[in-house]
Image 1 (tube, helix red, strand yellow):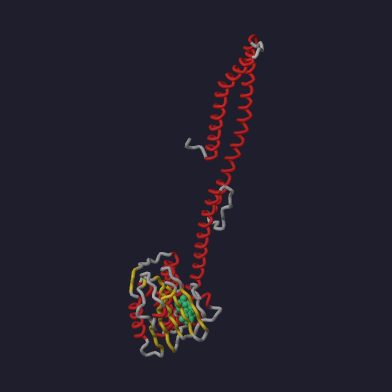
Image 2: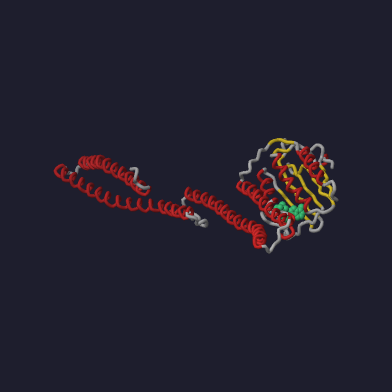
Length: 375
Ligand code: ADP
């Protein structure tokens, strides 16, 4: 029985059921109909019909008629049932075989292969969940391809520059000078930063960045960051301002990741703001803690805004290459926020400044009314 396929099993089970039915019919029929026939003859005899002499003949005649009837019933009924059973098992097998073909295709790399819908609800549910999985895998595959192509593009530029300098130095068309070595070192540093960022991004995209959520004091984290950045701003025209209500509730997320998010946002804000201020604000809204980083810098144009969180995206490639940006920071930031059940938003007016704000969960459920917040 172990090597019989599903179709064979279905067929066999139908046949067994049918045989049981027929056998019961014949045995019971044989016993009862003969008895009933005999009773009928007796009733007729009581009424005065003289059947005594032909009783035996009648009985054998009846038995042979019954026998022949039963025989043909078995032949016709049996073959009709067998044919029906064959068709039924085929109908169940066909979508299964088709599904098998599709999964094989999919496994062989044909990512667009999808299951057709079937009229058997269980198979339909199976097809639906397979299709969901296929779509998810297809997306991952697509992202992987995009990443590789973005990556080669990003790596090629500094490599070409380094190669050019090195060849020039080798054949003497470029004179070795501290400035040249500085530029070479700059490009290799850029490569290193790119590789580090990429590692972080790939972890974030795969969801492998560990998030160690706990209750923590957002206020002290923001103060600490503010002090740290202000130390670097002593001689500049810029100012970093902290605006946080004194009764802000504790946050529930990973303080290190929140710090990483803020370092990215503050770094950008300060980088793209030459004068004016950068404000860090925290508030409670819609049951979440919202932290905003508001700058008075160059701003982002309306057409650039939708792309801002895409990886490798920079508003002006040549300008930002000088500033050392890789265009990965905000992509990582977005993943970090989302991994902690938050959302990130951006608003900006070109030439006037930008506001990045993100949310993180509150530790305790008590929501502080907004009117009690003081800036
Ligand atoms: P990068 O490493 O290049 O800064 P990001 O992903 O952090 O990469 O930012 C992507 C791009 O978004 C930047 O190159 C810049 O053009 C734009 N951008 C980010 N933050 C700001 C900001 N506060 N003001 C203006 N432009 C910004």
